[in-house]
Image (cartoon, rainbow, N blue to C red; front, top):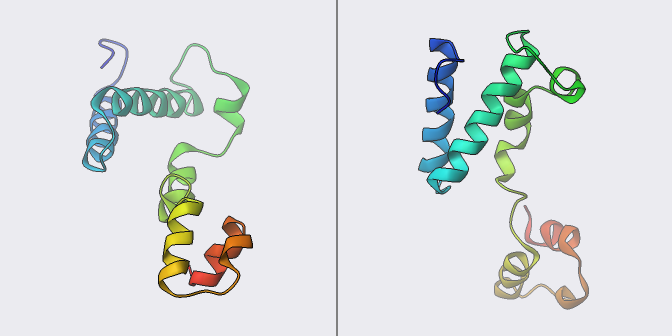
Length: 108
């Protein structure tokens, strides 16, 4: 964790995000990077950083973006996973379906 530049609140936020990511199976170094980027973006959005990119201040907030995407994980299931489920359910025409069609066919 970067030392000396974050408030106690931001340090707690960093640890919370990092712990959540490692609990979900992300490697420690990846979790640390994602947590640091998220905290830095929040600092920029709230005027706590010396410099901020335009996307940091104008884009959708990290917390809102996570809430919008949390139900699907990292992009949802793969086409191959959906295909395997369709095969189990004996869905006709599954070999010609794309990912969106397979999602619809298996009911998710």
